[in-house]
Amino acid sequence: PSLANLGYDGLRQDAKRGRKTGKRGHTYGVATFWRRNRFTLKDYSCRSRTLITTIEDELCDHKPILAIINCHLEGNPKKSVTRVRQLHHTLEELSSEFSHHGVIVAGDMNCQLGKSACSTYLEMGCCPSTVIDIREWGEIVNDLHEGDYCLADIPPHPYDLHSVYPMELVEEQSVDYITFVNTPNSFVIGLDQIWFHNDDKNSLSINMQVVGFKKAFHSSEQRQQILENGLPSKYHPSDHMPIGCVFEWSLPEEGNNTINTNDLCTRCQNKKELNLTNMTQEELVDKATELLGACTFNAPSERSEFEFVS
Image (cartoon, rainbow, N blue to C red; front, side, top):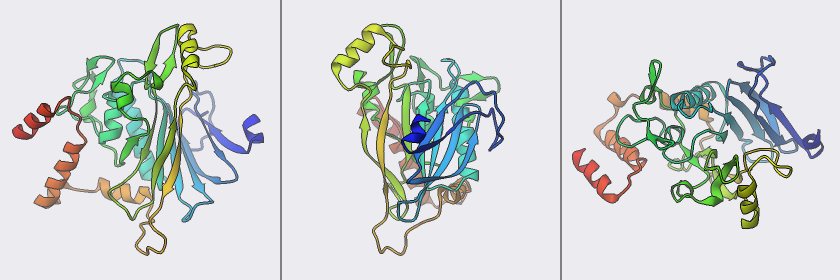
C-alpha cells in the first residue's frame, strides 16, 4: 500500500512455476515495481528463482518494452552449475516468448561479480571450459559437475550483457561495493548485481545506457557502523545493502528512417539460428576477435601467450 500511494504498481513472485498461473506457496519471493504514470505492464512469468516482468515505456518515442529479470539465485556456494542453469532457463524463456527492446538482470546472485560462473555466463554468453579460469569462492570451477551437467554444457544466451558496477570494484576489494553483511566484520563484495543489454555495435537499434549508479553506503561513518554491528539492524531490516542505478534509452537520431524497431525476441531468434559453418572466413575471424576481446587475462603476457598458441 505504501508504494501504491507513491504511484507504483508491482508484481511479487508468488508462483513456483508458470506464466500467470496464480499458484501460491513459493518460499522465495522477489518483487518488481514500476511507476504507473510511465510504464504499463505487458507480461510476466514466475520461475523457481526468478521473476520476468515486461513493461512498456509510454513516455518514450517508439514506446520500447523493458524486460526485467529479478533474481534470487541458488544459495548453496557449491552449486555454481545450478545458478547458471537458472539464468539460462530464464533468459531462454525471455528471448523466446516475450516482446522486448531492453533487458535488465538484477538481484541476489549468491556469487560475486567478476570471475564467478554467473558473471562469466552473463558477460560472455557462455561458460567456456578453457581460455579463462572461472572462480567461485576461491576455487576454480570450470570442470565442476552437478549430476549430468557441467558449466560448459549449458547453452549460450543471445544477449550482450554488461555489468552496471565495474568489475574493478570487486578485483580491488572496494569496500564501496559491499552488498552483504552478516555478523560483525563478515561481509561479501558484489553479491547483489545489476546487468543490462546494450548492443553497442548496432547504432540503429534501441539500446540502454547507464547514467549513474548508487553506492551501497552514503558515508564512511555509516559503513563503519554497519560493519562493526552487522545486519540486520533496526535501521536496516535486511542483511543486504541496497544498490541501484539510473538508465536512459539510447535511441537512434530523429529522422533516421533505418531505425531497427524489431524487438529483441526477434533478433535473439535470428542470433540463435546463426550457423558458424555457413560463415565466411572474414566473419569467423570477426567472431573470434569478438570472443577474444571478452576474455579476461591477468597480465599482458598471458594474452600474448594465448594469441601465440592460437
